[in-house]
Image 1 (cartoon, rainbow, N blue to C red):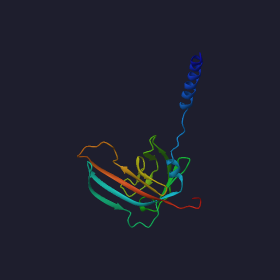
Image 2: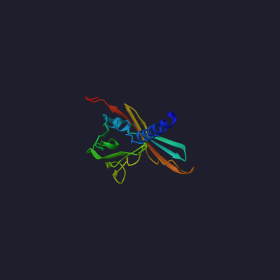
Image 3: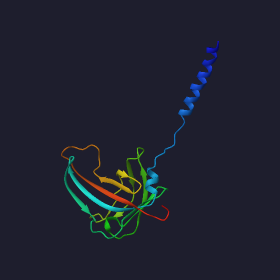
Image 4: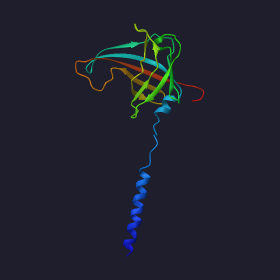
Length: 168
């Protein structure tokens, strides 16, 4: 008789645990917080040229630049970039977003650059390589995961360091 009384109790316990575990979990990612804490200053810019996955050459850009290039991400998903391409210019404004897996970032910032067109959106698709408390590195360009062994690719690697602010 005692065993029969335990079956309804066991059923209630199983149903309760099912409902507790099926509740929607909050996204506990720290990546948006790391991006929006402080101002990121460009420290290095490398351009790698590949055929397939073989690197052919590497160029270092802005090595002699004495103008600070600053990338700022705001909590309201807006962002700014100052002095793109080591060229004093008005601050470019746009928005930013992360993919669900937090491995890619996109920003619709339009900047003036040194190309014949004169304007570009260099951060439209960005692969995050490293994001720490004080450093941020990402790749742009031909960052497709699938490419042929004879395909020519150009990848730009931006390296940023977080600047200290009075609120940090």
